Each structure stands twice: as structure tokens, then as C-alpha cells.
Image (tube, rainbow, N blue to C red; front, side, top):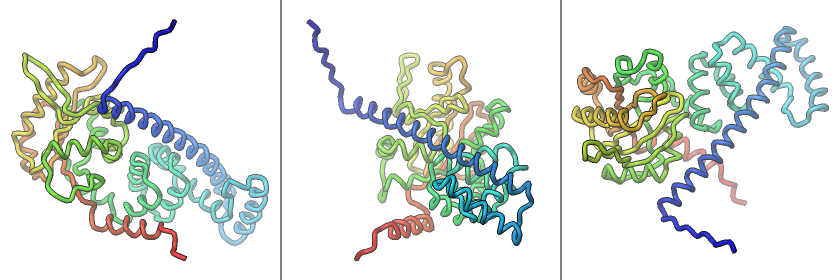
Length: 342
């Protein structure tokens, strides 16, 4: 006779199982969506190349494209082969066939509507790369991509000084990539915080909305845990939040501070990174990286605090409210999405 095996788990353990299951499903959906986009865009790229190679322009070319649209739609009615879209395909190929491979790979993963928006905006290639990578990493819909362009997010990001010591504390091959991965500012407006909170409360809210926080951090991060316990020499230490970044192949420790940056935060983070490298880092992994996330920072204060530190540490600010322009755009979008009252 088979005995019935019963197990019990507490709410926290179940919550972790649920979060992991949801993350798996979202990951698969994202992968499938990217594969679909890549396949569709590959077809559009090749049609665009055909039109480009035939030197089709306005006038005589317009008649050819219209006729081509009619015949193609008869054969493939669900592929969006209108004359306007065919011209977009030509422009798509024309803009990117000589571009850097990073640009080509990034736009290939975007939904077609995102690509037509970028084409209409006539952005320099470095901005196309920036916005396409941001849209991919954060799952932006077309409206959010438009808002980011309107807010000139690229220029704002370029103006932000890098507050880290990556150039001296990381292998040379990793420095540029680490500077792409980590930013000087993060928007935590998704937490909905409207009054002062303690650090532990901020941490709890981030854990509850870990999916939103991972999207804000960017692509490649996996959440390991909060208040992550490290034991050494009969003493216990707790890292606020611990992540792993697949691209960097490194553990990432995040310390949350509700006030302005203080120099002593660096010493504490330096200790945590030493313990992580000694106790947790795999043999094939790179040195652990620390991010001090605080409400405010002064670049010169950070620079002097990191001057003689050999562990890779960055300092970033966070915002608890959405920027005014972005908030207004989202409110307007929400109003416009409502069904009209009959």
C-alpha cells in the first residue's frame, strides 16, 4: 500500500515558489516574443533589401510598390504588406544595413511598431541602439518608448556621471559592459511611496514588487534573496538584497539607504564583497560587485570615498516618484485607454 506523503510549507516559502514559477513563464513568453519579432523582421529586412536593390523611389516606384502590395496581400493577407509598410521595410534596410552589428541585432528583436516609430523619429544610430536596448530590457510598449524619446532619456542618461570605481576594480574586458549594466539613477516610482519610509520597509516593498525592480535594473539580473546571511569568524552579516548577473557572471550586492550617501557606506560594502568572494563566489565567476542605492549623492563625495578601494562598487540614486512629464504622459495614456461613455 502506498503511503500518502504530505508536506507543509509556510507562506514565505510558497511565495518564493510562486515568484519563481511566474518568472519562468515570463521568461519563456519573452523568449518566444523575441523569436517571433526576429523572424518577422528578418522577412521585412529582406523585402526592404529587395526594394532598395531595385532603386525604387517615388513616382514610378510608387506604382510598383502599390502593385506589389496588392499581389503580396492576396498571398499573405495577415502580414501587414500595405504600400506604407513596404516603404517602411525599404527604409528599415536602408538605415541599418551598414550599421554596427549591435544596432542590427537590437532592432531585429523589437516589435515592428517600435521599429516604425524609431524610423519616423530619424534618430542617430547611437540613440537607436540605446532606445531599442532599453525597450527590449524593460519590455516597453510602443507608448512608453515614445514617452522615453519625448523625455530625451538618452541625453539625460549621457549627462549622468558614473559614480563607480569599475575602471580600476574590474578586469578591463568587463569595465565597459559593467558601465552599460549599472546606471547612476533608478526610478522606484512603481512602489507608490508617498511618505517617508525606513530602509527595511523600502526593502520589503522592493521584494514584494521584485519583478518591477528587476525590470528597472535591466536585463540579466536574477534575484537570490534579501537579508542574505553571511557567516564568518563566528559573526553574522546580512546583505540587503543579493542578485546574480548572467552577463557579468558575478554576484551583485545591493545596499539600500534612505538618506544621502555617506563615505562609511563604502567600507561596509567592501566588507560584504570580500565575504561574498570568499564564501559564495563560484570558481568560474567574476568578482562580486556592490551597488549602494541611496536617496541622494554628491559625485565628488563618492569619488573620494572610492579612491583607494579595490572592490568594484557603484553608487546610484533612486527616485520614489515618477518624473512629472512621465507621470502626466501615463495619466493621459490611461485616460485615452478608457472606453468612451455612451
